[in-house]
Each structure stands twice: as C-alpha cells, then as structure tokens.
Length: 456
Image 1 (cartoon, rainbow, N blue to C red):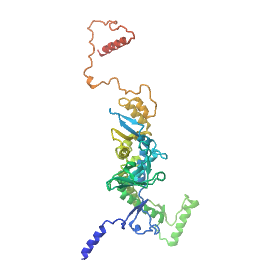
Image 2 (spheres, helix red, strand yellow):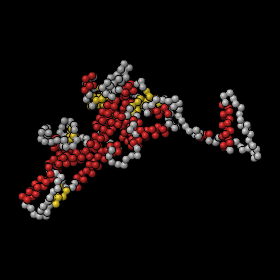
Image 3 (cartoon, one colour):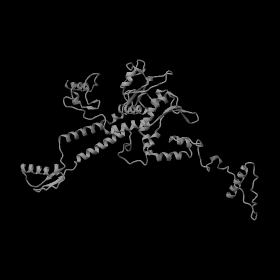
Image 4 (cartoon, one colour):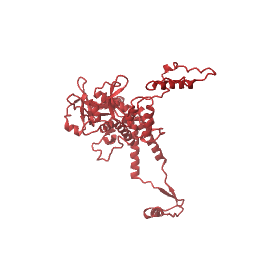
C-alpha cells in the first residue's frame, strides 16, 4: 500500500494543473522572472523578494533594436510585373498610400519600428486595418501593442486588439475584429497556428545564468569590500598594532594625501589586489552567453560592433546579415502585408522593402556597384535615380563595348582583303569613292578601305 501511495502521489504531482490552480514557478512577469519561492506569497515584494533576472539583457536589447531599426530604415514599394520579365512601381493603390503614411500620427518608419520590436520581443505583432474608404480599400493602419486571436465555432478567425490609446478613442474595438481587418505578423508557432513565439525563449537558460550571476555580483559588491592594496609582513603584530598601521596607511593614502609617498615600517609590503580567477571565468562565461543570444537571433556579432573577424566592406557585412536573419525578417513582414492587401504574390504583385538604403553610409561602394552595373546591366539614368539625380538625355539606353558581338556571329566575320601582287603599286585614287550629297558614302568607303589595309 505504501508503494502504491508513492506512485499515486508522484502521478498527482506530475499532473498538469487545471486552469486557475497553483502552478510551480518560476513565473514570467512584466520586466523579469519571479522565483518559485517568492511566488508562494501574494505580497512577495513586501517580504523582500525581487525579480532576479529580467526578460531582456543588453545583448537581447541590442539584437531586437538592430532588427527593428534596420527594418524601419528600408523604404517599401508596391510592385507589379510587366509581363516581360520587368516590373513597375504602383503609386495609386491603397498599399502604396499606406506605405507612405499609415495614419495621421505615425510615419511608416515609426510603425515598422514598433511592430518589428514587438515581433522579436513577444513573437507576434498586430495592427488594426478596419478603417476603409468608399471603395472598401484600407485607408489607415494603426499599431496595437497587444492582441489575442479568437476562433469561431466554424473556424472563423477574429481578434481582440488593445494597447493603442488613440485608436481606442476613435474606434469601437470592444467587439471581436475579423481577420480581414487585422495585420498579424508572427514568428514560429509551436503551440498554436496563430500564436507566435520569440527567439528570446530559446535564450532562457543564458538569460537566467547571466541574470543570476550578475545579481550575485551586485550583491557581493554592495555588501562586501575589495581593497586595491594589501599590506603583508612576517612579524607578529598585536591587534592594536594592526589597527594603528591600518589607520596610518589610510591617513597617508586617502583624502588630501592621496597619491603621496608612503613610508612603511615593521617590514610591511604593499601588494596590489589583483582580479580573482573566478571573476575572469565569470566574464568569459558571460561573453559566451552573449554569443549564444546572438546565435539565437541569427545576428552577426560584427553588426553589433563586437567579436569576430571584421568584414572587408559594409556591403559584405550587410549581405551576410541579409542571407541570415534580416532577409527572413523583411520577407516575413512583406508577406504579411501582401496577405492583408490581397496581393497575388511574387513575382506578379508584391510589396518589397528596399535594402539598398542600408548602403547609404558606404558611398564609395555604392558608386562602384552602380558604375559596374551601367556597363552591361542597367542604364545610366537608372543608376542616377538611385542617387536621386535627374535623368540625362541619352541615358535610357544600356551601354556595351564595341568589340562585343553575339556568339552566333563569331564564325561569320568577313575575311580581310588580299594583299596586292608584288611590284604593283596602289593607286592613291583607287580607294577614293565618289562623294554623295552628304559625304556619308565616302566616309564609309574610306573606313572599310583603312580597315582592310590594317587587317592585311
């Protein structure tokens, strides 16, 4: 019976608590984690407990800020395929107007900054798009700090949105909002198809370790002292002599006498207090913890200005980040906008955030890339538009070098003219053509004759 009671007790302990029942900690609160011991008390803050380690540290803040600020830097456009492999910018659609100005109190940069930050901090971001014009097109887009997806009896999707004081004053958001009026961007959804999770959860152990270690160090430095020098001697000193020598050292090295020459007696030797080995190991472990956080966010350390071999150029650094986390972030946000505005998708109709704006600080690299591109790929005026320069006459044609010919013409080049027989002299008037009205025929014949002599 005792063995059966133990088994049943273990099963009861392992059972998942029902809604409203007590759950063992630690508990995630706004601003940090609360330990299981402190969570047993409703007034845990009055009993001296505090949040031991926060939800975000310096590295997490750096990664989230890098994503949100970089996405906000990229201007967006509505593009449509022209059917011949090219594309054209759409400037008269509802999407193009929203990209330019989402509402009357926010810029698009402000909207993208807050939504991307919310996306990587919480795993999902929301915006209200229920304001429409006479053609039932989306006329305004309002960012919401919080949102909750709701499912109807037949699988219909609705949302409860809140957290925007301006929108809550202007619109009735008390009722469930249909999915067609909500911009919902979400990351990985392991628990529910409509509930995203942030990569911060993958760094929970690193954050717990760094938070606990830093809290312990703060407690140590607040409650203990570490002198910069220690006095050593081989002689036996009484308590009174030790106290007198300590006071003499303090008098000679602090206050007005700071930095003065100190005279030691009784065979005393001043030895500087070095950093403990444990502190060095702690610094290395915290550094490794930061690297793991950056790895979870797919963030090159060079973007944050720390660690690793620097890239050869800004373009190479940005290309590396685009191939990793930034490219996914931009594409994920673009697809969410396309779904809200009912776009056909790439390559027929889509929205794109231009990453060329990230190279504004590297003017030389941008000029080199545009100069190389105008030789075979793009026209001069297309390159000038990247630099916000006006078009020039004749700049709409692609330039190529004169010696380039199609591969199909390589074996069809005419043979050069034969040399005249030995002893014959060329008649200087032989190659002289009859001048036509404008002289064009004469110039062409002279050119062909000179080319034949040069080839011979």
